[in-house]
Image (cartoon, rainbow, N blue to C red; front, top):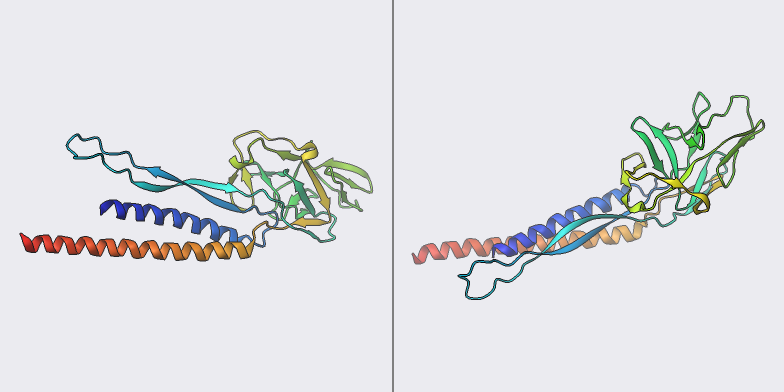
Length: 246
């Protein structure tokens, strides 16, 4: 009876984790370049008891454990904006931005210039070029960003946006503000990533699919809660009857 309760609790913990992931996906349906995550679970078989006094071998109990989340790297829909500083990242590449905590990586291509003329994200983080930050003077006009990241104005080339990839992108860690961090060093994207100027990559979250998952998780959670409640009532009834017999 206790095993049934423990299995139910392990299921509820896993379902709560999945609910958190779905809620985060839904909250970022409109976030530029956002990549959805999916939960991963694994069966865990409790080792059998080893005491020699049992008349027969103890049954192994199946639990569920959280194996983390998987990053969905599918390309999000591309939307034309006409803004020459907006870039949609195509392929497996990421933009590199400088934050107070060091270099971070993003797919958010809604770029702009700050009062100093630095090319930054809409959160104000400087976009890194091959030679460092990219700066555009106040008198420069006709800014364009090429497919390879080359930033040009009427005065010529101002730099090239740095595009990188990772050997294992699933190891990327979300840090908020649509940024990723990585313990592994990135490598130049080369042909694995290109930029489309005047456009933005939207979130790759599929709202209808996420809503369906949300309803499934809620139904399952309610069902498991009912099983746990019935098992608890059964245990209470058994204890009361045993006390009456005594």
